Length: 260
Image 1 (cartoon, rainbow, N blue to C red):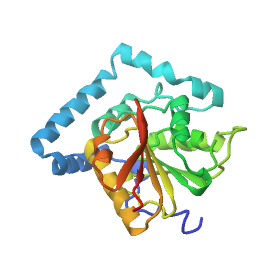
Image 2: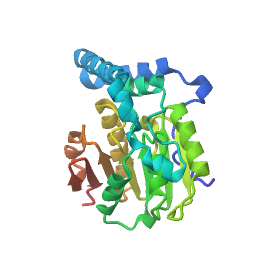
Image 3: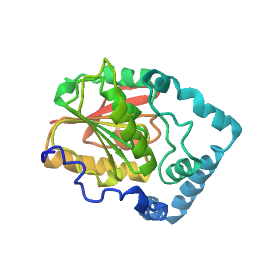
Image 4: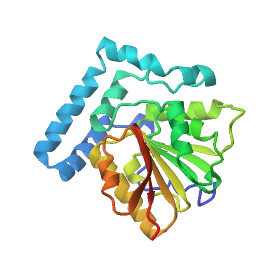
């Protein structure tokens, strides 16, 4: 692996191996940064709301809905569905970020069609890559390379298995890398990048990730695109003066950095 390839994985505080993964440490960091962003009272309200949404996943109707995204897995002999994600994993991600969902293939294709660039000039990065479905779908496009960042070791391990076993006649990018680390610690590669987000973070975390991305672009000017699926916190992108919206639909938006 050359220096460019190791850019992402060498970025400061990669998550520890699964045996040393600490839910308490993850939650403590989330709480500190939430309080810094929102203040105590609103952070508590946000936390209660997140816990309530996570507990709702136990309802029979919600559990049944988890099986609505199996078609991609059947077609590609993969395991990217949320149907078999353990409650502990879903609860922790729901409490500190957002519960795991896999991107619908037709929506991903729609987003890619809306981005007017030569993909072969870009590195694709999925922040909050979960089990890796988007990484597999992105490999059907001629990106220079594809990277996924996931902080939950159990999801990352499944993503790695999916990457290792994936085979498709449509595949155009062979270089896929998945890393287990916190997206807030990512040092972005210095080449043109396309960042994909399926609303994986809390508002406070997304704000920090966008600020880190802004600093990276300021230090090394280059084309950067941000594709945001499920636009719960799109206001953070819309209010960023260094970004401009170039495409949108009901369920997603695409921004790029201003180059002037």
